[in-house]
Length: 429
Image (cartoon, rainbow, N blue to C red; front, side, top):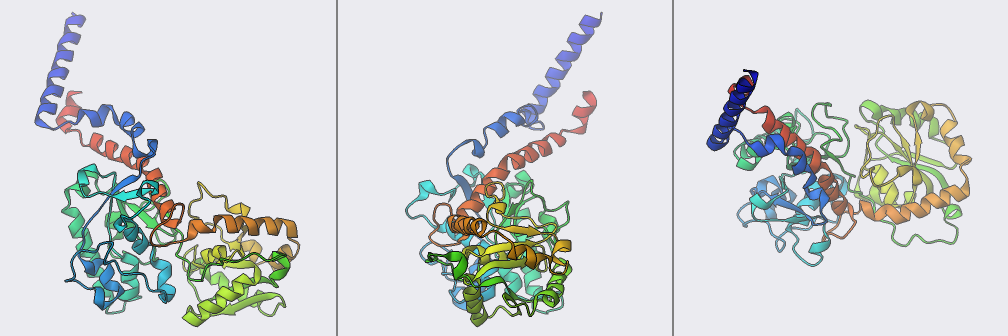
């Protein structure tokens, strides 16, 4: 009796599954073979990441670089891509979105050595890139919430969201395989919650709630350094050649954790071999900072408005050992690069203890400092943004980080499909 009942039940289940597959309600592969799909992911291969880049109107990207690049000139290509201005100043630090877009436009030599290549057919893509210069939009269309020009930034964000919602590829994955740069702390501030499933390129998580941005799906990028890279740093005695013990030059009026800068100013100003100066990021001051970092053994990196700041990466390309003061900083490429090999870390409590930080630096062994200096010279190319892109530069590293996130993204997509099993099928089971 029980045997016949079991056979009948099995036949009913087989019939229902077959009908569901036939009418398209159930994707059997998504439910039962998601782990196999993850194992066959791009990360298991050596081929470049295949990226489809949406062809957005110029107002969303290069038109913000200057009126001469506005709409009406046709699509952006490798031939007409405007070069990032050499005198871009502080806006350069938020230009990660430009360099990622440029790397996909480039189709010159060395394609087989790149981590990501552009594909014209979205059906063959591993991931999708959204070329909206959200950080440049903040810097171009208003810096604060009350600036009237900010409304332009708000409108651009809304248009991008509407565009993506109409994309079948965005709908297909819920945006999970879409890459969106947001490196300015206020980038996409009006609509970022609507894109929280996508792979976000951020510099830290200081302005993001935990339910929106996490290391499991997002990529931490370096800021683009604004000081000139130190190319010929090869003195006989690098330690003695750098006469300043500790260097800081920058804005001391910051928010949140960055308020520590004012407290540090009171403690460090006036010490003979410590240079702590309030300064705005003008072209002339950037040149002074370049010179100052090259003549300093240690470069102080307290938090900015968020835990990170461009100063850390200025120090790295200046081969000045970073002194990082933070309790919760996220660092780029940390799964591949050990920052303790070339940086020193202090908690905020330690840094604010009178005399403690400077005394620790004075006692720091010379041979250990020289090892850190050598390591900085070895790894600084990982933080270079350039065009044409080069192997192992910052853009190469970022695309590799995206590649590392895809198994988690694929798993989320499969789970989402599984959760969409029709209610009638769950009840039958």
